[in-house]
Amino acid sequence: MTGSAEGPKERRRLAAELRALRAQAGLSGRELASGIDRVSQSKVSRIEAGTAMPTLAQIERWAELTGATPEKTRNLLMLAERAFNEIHAWGTLLKDRPHQQDEIGKREGGARMVRTFEPLIVPGLLQTAEYARQVFDLSPLATVREGVPAAVSARMDRQLALYDPGQRFEFLITEASLRWCPGQEGRGLLPAQLDRVHSLSTLRNVSIGVIRDGAPALTYAAHGFVIYEGRDADDVCVGVEAVHAGMALHDPDVIEMYERTWTALKRTALFGDEARQIVIEHLSAFRVPAE
Image (cartoon, rainbow, N blue to C red; front, side, top):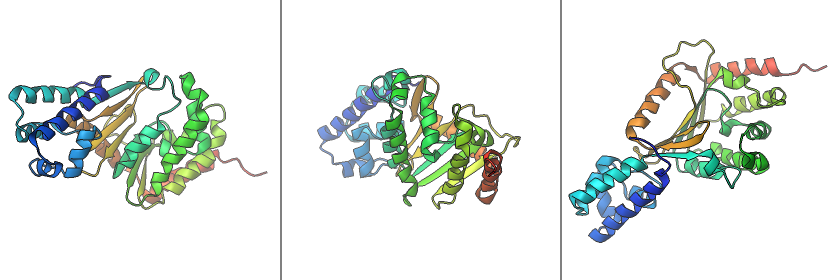
Protein backbone atom coordinates (compact mmCIF):
# COMPACT_ATOMS: atom_id res chain seq x y z
CA MET A 1 0.00 0.00 0.00
CA THR A 2 1.37 3.39 -0.88
CA GLY A 3 0.98 6.72 0.83
CA SER A 4 -0.18 9.88 -0.90
CA ALA A 5 -0.82 13.53 -0.22
CA GLU A 6 -4.50 12.67 -0.56
CA GLY A 7 -4.44 10.59 2.64
CA PRO A 8 -6.36 13.01 4.92
CA LYS A 9 -8.96 13.74 2.22
CA GLU A 10 -9.43 10.04 1.48
CA ARG A 11 -9.77 9.23 5.16
CA ARG A 12 -12.51 11.83 5.52
CA ARG A 13 -14.26 10.36 2.48
CA LEU A 14 -14.00 6.85 3.92
CA ALA A 15 -15.40 8.05 7.24
CA ALA A 16 -18.35 9.71 5.51
CA GLU A 17 -19.07 6.63 3.37
CA LEU A 18 -19.04 4.29 6.37
CA ARG A 19 -21.18 6.66 8.41
CA ALA A 20 -23.72 6.86 5.59
CA LEU A 21 -23.87 3.07 5.26
CA ARG A 22 -24.64 2.64 8.95
CA ALA A 23 -27.30 5.34 8.88
CA GLN A 24 -28.96 3.84 5.80
CA ALA A 25 -29.01 0.43 7.46
CA GLY A 26 -30.68 1.90 10.55
CA LEU A 27 -28.03 0.49 12.89
CA SER A 28 -26.80 2.18 16.04
CA GLY A 29 -23.10 2.40 16.74
CA ARG A 30 -23.49 -0.18 19.50
CA GLU A 31 -25.36 -2.60 17.23
CA LEU A 32 -22.75 -2.30 14.50
CA ALA A 33 -19.83 -2.66 16.90
CA SER A 34 -21.25 -5.87 18.35
CA GLY A 35 -20.88 -7.55 14.96
CA ILE A 36 -17.31 -6.47 14.15
CA ASP A 37 -14.29 -8.09 15.76
CA ARG A 38 -12.22 -5.76 17.97
CA VAL A 39 -14.43 -2.73 17.38
CA SER A 40 -16.16 -0.94 20.25
CA GLN A 41 -18.97 1.59 20.08
CA SER A 42 -16.46 4.35 20.80
CA LYS A 43 -14.26 3.18 17.95
CA VAL A 44 -17.23 3.26 15.58
CA SER A 45 -17.61 6.92 16.53
CA ARG A 46 -13.91 7.61 15.96
CA ILE A 47 -13.94 5.83 12.60
CA GLU A 48 -16.93 7.86 11.48
CA ALA A 49 -15.22 11.04 12.67
CA GLY A 50 -12.09 10.16 10.70
CA THR A 51 -9.87 9.98 13.78
CA ALA A 52 -9.36 6.20 13.69
CA MET A 53 -8.66 3.86 10.79
CA PRO A 54 -10.44 0.49 10.51
CA THR A 55 -8.61 -2.52 9.11
CA LEU A 56 -9.59 -3.93 5.72
CA ALA A 57 -11.25 -6.89 7.44
CA GLN A 58 -13.29 -4.52 9.62
CA ILE A 59 -14.36 -2.52 6.56
CA GLU A 60 -15.49 -5.71 4.82
CA ARG A 61 -17.52 -6.72 7.88
CA TRP A 62 -18.96 -3.19 8.20
CA ALA A 63 -20.08 -3.37 4.57
CA GLU A 64 -21.59 -6.83 5.08
CA LEU A 65 -23.57 -5.80 8.17
CA THR A 66 -24.92 -2.67 6.47
CA GLY A 67 -25.93 -4.46 3.26
CA ALA A 68 -23.42 -2.79 0.94
CA THR A 69 -23.21 -4.12 -2.61
CA PRO A 70 -20.06 -5.98 -3.73
CA GLU A 71 -19.12 -3.00 -5.89
CA LYS A 72 -19.56 -0.62 -2.97
CA THR A 73 -17.42 -2.86 -0.79
CA ARG A 74 -14.65 -2.92 -3.39
CA ASN A 75 -14.73 0.87 -3.65
CA LEU A 76 -14.49 1.20 0.13
CA LEU A 77 -11.47 -1.09 0.24
CA MET A 78 -9.76 0.87 -2.54
CA LEU A 79 -10.49 4.10 -0.68
CA ALA A 80 -9.02 2.63 2.49
CA GLU A 81 -5.85 1.60 0.66
CA ARG A 82 -5.29 5.23 -0.33
CA ALA A 83 -6.18 6.53 3.13
CA PHE A 84 -3.88 4.24 5.11
CA ASN A 85 -0.76 6.38 4.77
CA GLU A 86 -0.68 10.18 4.80
CA ILE A 87 2.21 12.31 3.54
CA HIS A 88 2.24 16.03 4.38
CA ALA A 89 4.92 18.11 2.64
CA TRP A 90 6.34 20.61 5.13
CA GLY A 91 6.28 23.40 2.56
CA THR A 92 2.51 22.94 2.20
CA LEU A 93 1.68 22.01 5.78
CA LEU A 94 3.55 24.97 7.30
CA LYS A 95 3.03 27.47 4.50
CA ASP A 96 0.85 29.79 6.58
CA ARG A 97 1.64 28.73 10.14
CA PRO A 98 4.80 28.26 12.21
CA HIS A 99 4.21 24.83 13.72
CA GLN A 100 1.97 21.79 14.09
CA GLN A 101 2.54 21.20 17.80
CA ASP A 102 -1.18 21.39 18.57
CA GLU A 103 -1.98 18.59 16.11
CA ILE A 104 0.81 16.43 17.52
CA GLY A 105 -0.46 17.13 21.02
CA LYS A 106 -3.96 15.96 20.09
CA ARG A 107 -2.55 12.73 18.68
CA GLU A 108 -0.53 12.19 21.86
CA GLY A 109 -3.53 13.04 24.03
CA GLY A 110 -5.61 10.33 22.37
CA ALA A 111 -2.98 7.65 22.94
CA ARG A 112 -2.61 5.39 25.95
CA MET A 113 1.05 4.83 25.01
CA VAL A 114 3.52 6.85 22.94
CA ARG A 115 6.82 5.23 21.93
CA THR A 116 9.53 7.44 20.42
CA PHE A 117 12.82 6.44 18.79
CA GLU A 118 15.23 9.26 18.03
CA PRO A 119 18.76 8.58 16.77
CA LEU A 120 19.94 12.19 16.40
CA ILE A 121 18.42 14.71 18.80
CA VAL A 122 16.63 14.79 22.14
CA PRO A 123 12.91 14.10 21.43
CA GLY A 124 10.57 17.08 21.60
CA LEU A 125 8.72 15.83 24.69
CA LEU A 126 12.01 15.81 26.60
CA GLN A 127 13.41 19.14 25.37
CA THR A 128 14.00 22.24 27.47
CA ALA A 129 12.57 25.49 26.12
CA GLU A 130 15.99 26.85 25.07
CA TYR A 131 16.97 23.61 23.33
CA ALA A 132 13.63 23.59 21.49
CA ARG A 133 14.16 27.23 20.49
CA GLN A 134 17.47 26.37 18.87
CA VAL A 135 15.94 23.37 17.07
CA PHE A 136 13.14 25.48 15.58
CA ASP A 137 15.67 28.16 14.58
CA LEU A 138 17.38 25.57 12.37
CA SER A 139 14.26 25.05 10.25
CA PRO A 140 14.69 25.77 6.51
CA LEU A 141 11.14 27.20 6.45
CA ALA A 142 10.77 30.94 7.03
CA THR A 143 7.32 30.53 8.60
CA VAL A 144 8.81 28.30 11.31
CA ARG A 145 11.76 30.60 12.03
CA GLU A 146 9.42 33.59 12.26
CA GLY A 147 7.12 31.81 14.71
CA VAL A 148 9.65 30.25 17.07
CA PRO A 149 8.19 31.64 20.34
CA ALA A 150 4.75 30.20 19.57
CA ALA A 151 6.24 26.86 18.53
CA VAL A 152 8.33 26.61 21.71
CA SER A 153 5.36 27.50 23.90
CA ALA A 154 3.19 24.87 22.22
CA ARG A 155 5.91 22.22 22.56
CA MET A 156 6.21 22.97 26.28
CA ASP A 157 2.42 22.62 26.62
CA ARG A 158 2.65 19.16 25.04
CA GLN A 159 4.99 18.06 27.80
CA LEU A 160 2.23 18.33 30.41
CA ALA A 161 1.04 14.93 29.17
CA LEU A 162 4.16 13.36 30.69
CA TYR A 163 2.63 13.93 34.12
CA ASP A 164 -0.62 12.13 33.29
CA PRO A 165 -0.50 8.74 35.10
CA GLY A 166 -3.08 7.40 32.66
CA GLN A 167 -0.59 7.57 29.81
CA ARG A 168 2.68 5.77 29.18
CA PHE A 169 5.68 7.25 27.36
CA GLU A 170 8.67 5.22 26.21
CA PHE A 171 11.76 6.71 24.59
CA LEU A 172 14.74 5.11 22.88
CA ILE A 173 17.61 7.50 22.22
CA THR A 174 21.24 7.10 21.24
CA GLU A 175 24.35 8.51 22.88
CA ALA A 176 24.71 10.64 19.75
CA SER A 177 21.38 12.32 20.53
CA LEU A 178 22.72 13.26 23.98
CA ARG A 179 25.75 14.96 22.39
CA TRP A 180 24.01 16.75 19.52
CA CYS A 181 24.41 20.54 19.78
CA PRO A 182 21.68 22.64 18.13
CA GLY A 183 23.15 25.82 16.69
CA GLN A 184 26.14 27.88 17.81
CA GLU A 185 24.87 28.02 21.39
CA GLY A 186 23.97 24.35 21.55
CA ARG A 187 26.91 23.18 23.63
CA GLY A 188 26.09 25.64 26.40
CA LEU A 189 22.49 24.38 26.49
CA LEU A 190 23.37 20.72 26.93
CA PRO A 191 23.93 20.64 30.72
CA ALA A 192 20.37 21.86 31.38
CA GLN A 193 19.01 19.61 28.63
CA LEU A 194 20.73 16.48 29.91
CA ASP A 195 19.63 17.28 33.45
CA ARG A 196 16.08 17.47 32.10
CA VAL A 197 16.37 14.03 30.49
CA HIS A 198 17.76 12.60 33.74
CA SER A 199 14.91 14.11 35.77
CA LEU A 200 12.11 12.94 33.46
CA SER A 201 13.52 9.40 33.44
CA THR A 202 12.45 9.08 37.08
CA LEU A 203 8.73 9.53 36.32
CA ARG A 204 6.80 6.30 36.88
CA ASN A 205 5.01 6.43 33.53
CA VAL A 206 8.12 7.41 31.55
CA SER A 207 10.82 5.02 30.33
CA ILE A 208 14.01 6.28 28.69
CA GLY A 209 16.37 3.78 27.13
CA VAL A 210 19.82 4.78 25.87
CA ILE A 211 21.62 2.88 23.12
CA ARG A 212 25.36 2.94 23.77
CA ASP A 213 27.87 3.85 21.07
CA GLY A 214 29.20 0.59 19.74
CA ALA A 215 26.35 -1.55 21.06
CA PRO A 216 25.90 -4.58 18.75
CA ALA A 217 23.11 -3.62 16.35
CA LEU A 218 20.12 -5.92 15.89
CA THR A 219 18.43 -3.76 13.26
CA TYR A 220 18.96 -0.65 11.14
CA ALA A 221 16.85 2.48 11.54
CA ALA A 222 18.05 5.52 9.61
CA HIS A 223 15.41 7.89 10.98
CA GLY A 224 13.32 8.47 14.05
CA PHE A 225 9.69 7.47 14.44
CA VAL A 226 6.84 7.57 16.93
CA ILE A 227 4.32 4.78 17.57
CA TYR A 228 0.98 5.99 18.96
CA GLU A 229 -1.18 3.31 20.59
CA GLY A 230 -4.83 4.25 21.08
CA ARG A 231 -7.33 2.97 23.60
CA ASP A 232 -8.21 0.02 21.35
CA ALA A 233 -5.59 -2.65 20.65
CA ASP A 234 -5.65 -2.11 16.88
CA ASP A 235 -5.85 1.69 17.02
CA VAL A 236 -2.19 2.32 16.18
CA CYS A 237 -0.49 4.98 14.08
CA VAL A 238 3.18 5.62 13.27
CA GLY A 239 4.49 9.14 12.81
CA VAL A 240 7.66 9.80 10.80
CA GLU A 241 9.34 13.14 10.13
CA ALA A 242 11.48 13.14 6.99
CA VAL A 243 13.44 16.09 5.62
CA HIS A 244 10.73 16.92 3.09
CA ALA A 245 7.53 15.82 4.82
CA GLY A 246 5.75 14.40 7.83
CA MET A 247 4.01 11.05 7.51
CA ALA A 248 1.17 9.39 9.43
CA LEU A 249 1.13 5.66 8.69
CA HIS A 250 -1.92 3.47 9.39
CA ASP A 251 -1.20 0.45 7.20
CA PRO A 252 -1.09 -2.61 9.53
CA ASP A 253 1.74 -4.19 7.51
CA VAL A 254 3.82 -1.01 7.75
CA ILE A 255 3.05 -0.65 11.45
CA GLU A 256 4.22 -4.21 12.04
CA MET A 257 7.58 -3.33 10.46
CA TYR A 258 8.01 -0.44 12.88
CA GLU A 259 6.92 -2.62 15.81
CA ARG A 260 9.61 -5.17 14.95
CA THR A 261 12.19 -2.41 14.57
CA TRP A 262 11.23 -0.96 17.96
CA THR A 263 11.55 -4.36 19.63
CA ALA A 264 15.01 -4.92 18.14
CA LEU A 265 16.20 -1.43 19.12
CA LYS A 266 14.88 -1.86 22.66
CA ARG A 267 16.91 -5.03 23.10
CA THR A 268 20.10 -3.01 22.55
CA ALA A 269 19.24 -0.20 24.99
CA LEU A 270 20.03 0.29 28.67
CA PHE A 271 17.32 1.45 31.08
CA GLY A 272 16.83 2.73 34.62
CA ASP A 273 19.96 3.46 36.63
CA GLU A 274 22.21 2.24 33.79
CA ALA A 275 20.65 4.72 31.37
CA ARG A 276 20.80 7.53 33.92
CA GLN A 277 24.49 6.82 34.48
CA ILE A 278 25.13 7.35 30.76
CA VAL A 279 23.30 10.68 30.93
CA ILE A 280 25.37 11.68 33.97
CA GLU A 281 28.59 10.82 32.11
CA HIS A 282 27.65 13.14 29.25
CA LEU A 283 26.39 15.78 31.67
CA SER A 284 29.78 15.80 33.40
CA ALA A 285 31.56 16.17 30.06
CA PHE A 286 29.55 19.25 29.07
CA ARG A 287 29.28 20.94 32.45
CA VAL A 288 31.62 23.93 32.84
CA PRO A 289 33.77 23.66 35.99
CA ALA A 290 33.19 26.38 38.58
CA GLU A 291 36.05 28.86 38.91
